[in-house]
Image 1 (tube, one colour):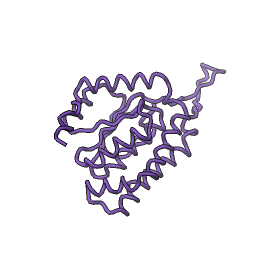
Image 2: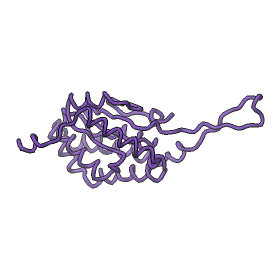
Image 3: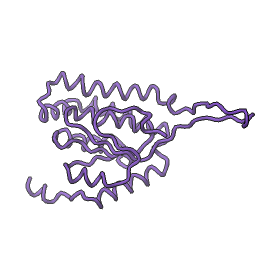
Image 4: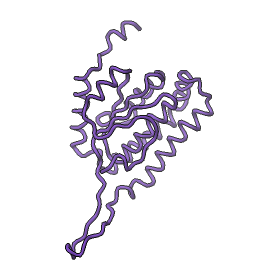
Length: 209
């Protein structure tokens, strides 16, 4: 175990800079803007929870001694509902909204088109480490952004599991997890982000301009 820790690459400012650069390159391809990509990622998240619920419950118990029922209802089920709500409404959210024009520009027409902000950073809280890590990501995905998740180091079992599950189920070219504590968080915060979220769920509109 000591050897593994010693051999683990150090995540520093340069690592964070490289990570953000890679995500911006992926975002620039336009893949996250497509309805199909967004739908695939949200459905993959639901599949992940259905297939890995026992592991998620176990990690939450290891970190916080949460009972299985509490984890299933207040973390997993709530996150599933967020995913399904986004899947149900995403086409409507993506549709342009008609806007009024002035008499001066008659007979022109106008519309408001929601565009993803770009690359967003999610810093999770410890008390609901699964829900508060992935619920903001649901909104970020539905709005078409690339994402970095920094789980709470105070819930290490959940943090480790999130890193494994996100890499396994979601698009690793656009959605990444960085584990660690203060030094890693500081390295991330030194970078330029289009949106930073810390603790709790957020609205879809926070990720669009």
